[in-house]
Amino acid sequence: MLPEPANTAEVELIVPREALRLSADQALRGTIFFRKGSIEFPTNDWDDFVVVLLEWWLRALMPIVRGEEASAEFLFMEGPYQVNVEAISPTMIVLQFFDRSKPEFLESDQGEQTLSDLTHRLCDASDVVIDRAKGIGLQNRDLDRLQTTLAEMRVQTNRQNSEL
Image 1: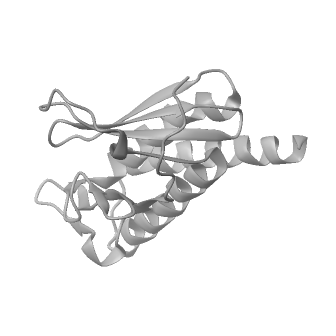
Image 2: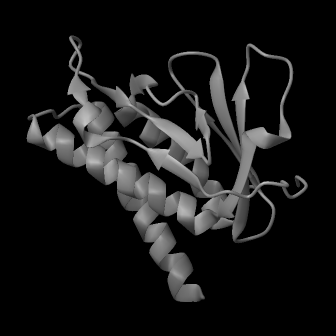
């Protein structure tokens, strides 16, 4: 497990609905990034395949939510970026922001928050993306997988909440 970070500013997941658009290859692209205080990772205008990323990230987080694993990686499709998620307790996590092209890691490049908050942020962002995709008539396997994984995550979090 990781030591608690000195700066525990809330970590946000930003996926602006107005920045979501259909690419030439019929994939939904858009701005997606994490914000912790003044840090925006990878950048505040990072453009990537949002449907695929959110499905990957939900699927990667599921074993932590279930208590089966203590860590996960959130990868970006474009660029050398990743977010490592480490459980420091059953309810708290640390997110570490990495640029794999740089050898150094700064302690300020991490943030602590509750597991349920991160899970809710991923689910909320997925809802925005799914709604936008349906609004433009997009239906494909990636979107189907995101919808399935989102439903699985909701079942799991409801199960966890009922056990509390």
